[in-house]
Image (cartoon, rainbow, N blue to C red; front, side, top):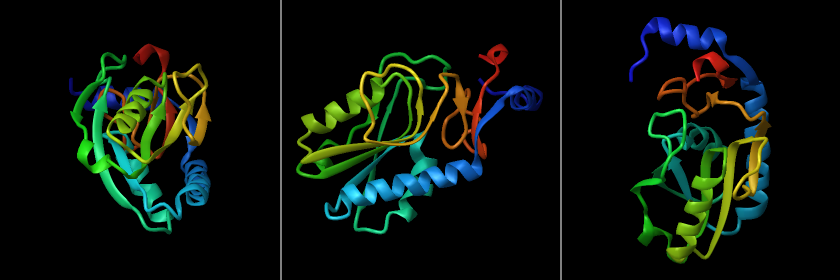
Length: 183
């Protein structure tokens, strides 16, 4: 469903900024330091979880000053909806994972269902090791924990820095909570 310009502006006007662009920049620097400490000697294969993590990857990867390779996987529970459903695999790079040190880079740790299944898939596909990093973690129980987290925020519906609201707002300059009226 496409949002009209009026709907888009109304959602943006009612949203609450939880994390500013400057705070996200500091979080990305912190993530880069933690990942460098853990992976600098591993020649990892970084798997960007599409589509949400593309912005996180674009901002984080230039901060990683060590040898690495990049690929992607595409697994989603949302497909543009505001509630998650079954995990749908669109691209699973099984052959590329075998024997590699893997860094899974995702946009958000919400319930942890997607991340847990992606980690399990990497192990099933023969990864030498698996490390996970998420840009945003919600304050709520999770099925798994990320190894590296950028920011922790309240359990609300969010958008910005790759997170979307009905396929919009991924490019918002901060992390915003959608107003209850818009969910």
